Image (cartoon, rainbow over all chains, first blue to last red; front, side):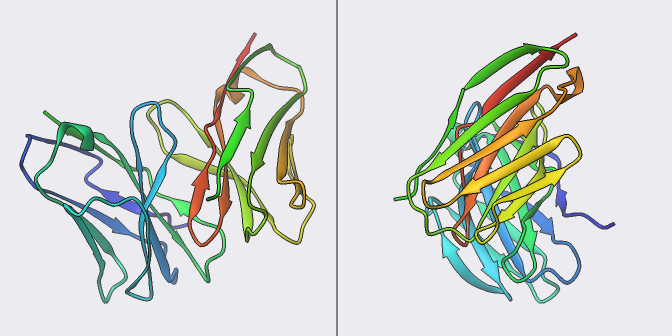
Length: 111
Length: 109
């Protein structure tokens, strides 16, 4: 069965650079979520989209933005990167707000 | 504000033991509760989902219960194996998932 796809899997950036993370949800899923998991932390909700519209917003810095496109894939754009942005970024998708299925994550390292 | 707590934070047991992991949450207004497994540096694998109207779910050696009124869920692992070693996270669904602090489990041969 198709799963959630995230790219890239690993990303190394320098401070003040920008990064774009991509997420391809499971086909026919209508909701995409982004989570950030810092070292030794539990995942924290960033933002979600339902049918290409932002549906909820969590602790997402103003330097970050996200959108969902017509083909339902989503991108998380991160600007002016800081050392503290180093984390695992997970995307999840669901159908009708039911069970969330997680992608393998993108490990971002900011040096 | 919803807060999710897991006890114990860490657990080390010999192979074959039956285990109970605990999860508590402060606001009973949830849609679902999910239990996940996470290996070090890896992604989240969904183990069980309990809808708010359900009391328990079972999958193989795993059984999860939910008592929404008291804000508690337990994950029961029967006949633990070294391959069960991982961090177990519970998460309550309030349109977004709010995760607990996790229980780091080690099962030794």
